[in-house]
Figure 1 (cartoon, rainbow, N blue to C red):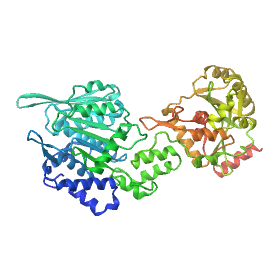
Figure 2: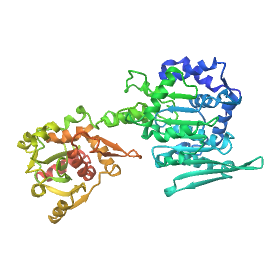
Figure 3: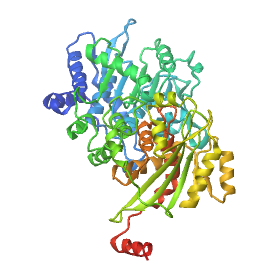
Figure 4: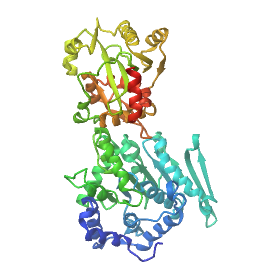
Length: 573
């Protein structure tokens, strides 16, 4: 319950001042700024307005997912500090009217800290609680689908309360997406409409708009500054507009979020823009990313919506690859990281290289094909699911690469790979001229079918049609495997696990080379896929392995001692 007259910002500020080591420097700067403002004579804190807003949020906003679904949102102390600052600070404008000081908020918190409901609370109050007539409210994100993460909980909030839903219409699109909400009402015998609109990529519609409230969700994912700038300009004529920017740190330095973040940091540092409120949870300079005290420091909802056990699980994955580490840093520690970090680091992969895979003749294997035409590598990956002496499932990977011989000296310098030496050792086969000779690839596949128990060929569809047709004529089952994240994510995750647990070995140095070059892209659902465009050097061998691993990851079952003895007796009967 929100009590009128209580200064909830003071409660949190005193807590930070009493235990400064528990809070990031950025949070302490926000608290210092709050105390500095309390001493000013040109602005003042209206607790009634701030507490009225928070009372509305706790009355109408409900959790819509998880164990708390259906229960009202009870604001944490840090959230009350934010809302008190945004809605409580007042000043007198040029016309002598009392208006809010804050016109733009930048809040940056790690994933799972209640970011969405905080945004929905501000949006709902602007639409229904603030009393602004004909208020136009917008939700912006990197794309329409991303905006649904805020739009759907907002629509659910409206539907869950008769008082809100009675005079509202919710407009939906394909697959239940929310496109807009219209709230119609009468004041002093005059009809008004408040609108909520989910923005698409069509920014031309911003021209001529007069937005009261703009929610920019996950700024780190937005690449185009034009939408942000146009909305900011469109709000300039209003007395009490609010641009509510809320985000987690992201990857890359070109995003809208990075630019707005840098500006927000300057506001915290210099206190030179009264219209901006800034609250950032990020580690202090020189932080240790493995220190759990740092994790607690930057996650304000630790123990509430963020559990230490969940962070520990994510940390285990983060230690396995550069990509997972970048994900952990950006999503859970709120640190901006480079967008093109390689998925694996040297010390995580180098141990998979061995000098001898043993006798594989007659062994069951699955083939993966990544076919190129000229500059890329063509690779046939032979994945052998097997077991070690203790019955642990292991995967042996043997590969053959095909490269056009023309300009081989240039290729060696460009890729920093001694291809001719690799050919002498049997890892590479040259094709005369500028093109890959598919006859040579077919001949190698036929050789594999004679030597091993080949189950099937998985292939990437690019340039593979004719070669696959010939393989099918040989009686080989061929399965198309697209390189989309929703297809490749499971193979990437399982390959990462196998490498980390020491269950994958190869005798081909080029496989390690391709693994170290790997860069992945992540879609909106968090699924990963290999990116040849973002990878600076060749990754074809790892892609061929992943394509085959769609099958071999299903074969990786450990056997106990009795099963192992039975298996060995059958092998050596």
